Image 1 (tube, rainbow, N blue to C red):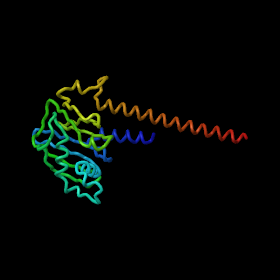
Image 2: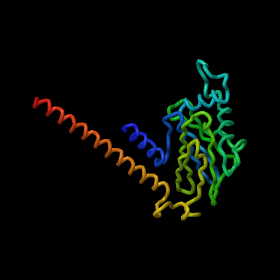
Image 3: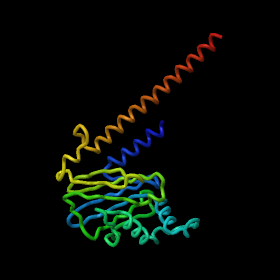
Image 4: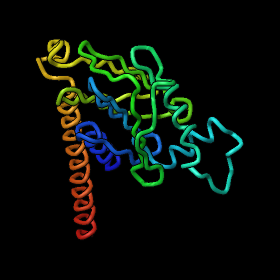
Length: 221
């Protein structure tokens, strides 16, 4: 139960923090900054994620005593540009590396898009990275546009995020009862956490009462 609570808190932190950082190899965060002048994509991951990518596309590296991650930056550029689609078109030939740190625990690469994206009507983002490497994958996607940030959670099964600026289509951004979808997820998660903690507390009370009864029976004897 404690693991479930900690896991839920981690998901909430990654989903609602302005900048997400990945702490497990199968967790990646993608931050799109859309602008009419310069648009960028920053991907956060762990160094182990990059090793798993290389071993997937270059099986000859499996079992290598050491891998120079900085020597494979072109492989990472090609890997992500082939597996991230914007409006059904991949980013091959449209990305260049602006900044990167592949060795830190919060490793990242910032890509610069060749064609800037203002996207006033929205954007379909499809992420297929590592879906064939990890059986359970979590992609946290952030889209920043004109001072607003939208958040999505993608997985092996759900790989597409349909983003629309709130000013462009505010009605579709609202969920049931007029609650924005991100806040709906937050409210449901908090409810689940509360129920889990209540259940966990009741189990502790029952155990304590049971132990007291057993002790009382032993004293009578």
